[in-house]
Image (tube, rainbow, N blue to C red):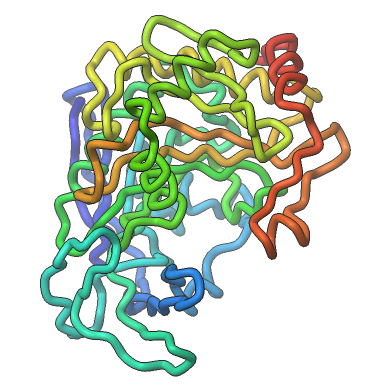
Length: 370
């Protein structure tokens, strides 16, 4: 893999990933861009013990441009990526977190399991406190083909995407103040995407996220060994396996929250993507794209989904974590969506409309598209 690092007109980093050593990315970004926005503000919720980022500059982010004006298509006047590419990663122009604090001294992270002091707190009332939203947000472009999808990528391209995820996870984890790195993809207008071009994102959080904290707390209380490994072993013996190969298993979890939800686990417990062996990275693409094509084949329409990599935090309880991918769709029928309504949104109490065993059966019988 060849990695080429360059910069956009406003100083943001752009990284090209190529399989060929002779790939040339000499074109430069000549746009006249405004200054980069200051970091967001983090506010602490004293009732839930969670941080909320307030990023006002994101109100002006690009929203569903035409294909001719897509900022992720390469080599046109408004593009974020001036050269043709295989896989490209760049700093988000409208980040939820950034190190651009306007001269505020963020100091060094004390790394205290998600409650790091990065340079002082301001009293904003309501028993809350505020601090700069230090971190980094990146965009990962899987392909230059505007009309493609992750499901249509070849195995070699998926492996290159995984190399980019691994590289960025390692690089971002080493930044001061970063406590967790999250690689994910949102796909489909129903999910709320703002750019239809096939891409994902990476968030480098300055805290351990609530879901991860809860999972690791539960794993710490589990007396049977490693909770994640035992869940995987039980599911591999059960009826909800959708696809599997030598290194990975994809299954519908017994208590799936969404109509169609699939978890993809490596058979070997590792904390994060960089820890995967070469053969494990190579084996991921075939099983994952099969699951995506089965989702698209369920109702004969492109399924909206969120694909979320659950990686170990940088330093908090890494011994308990188990890398896995959570894939879920809010489509419950050809013409119906599962909205997160009162119970889910207000109480965090999910009500699923589809029996997980039925969802697994439907996925296994679905016509594989592409």
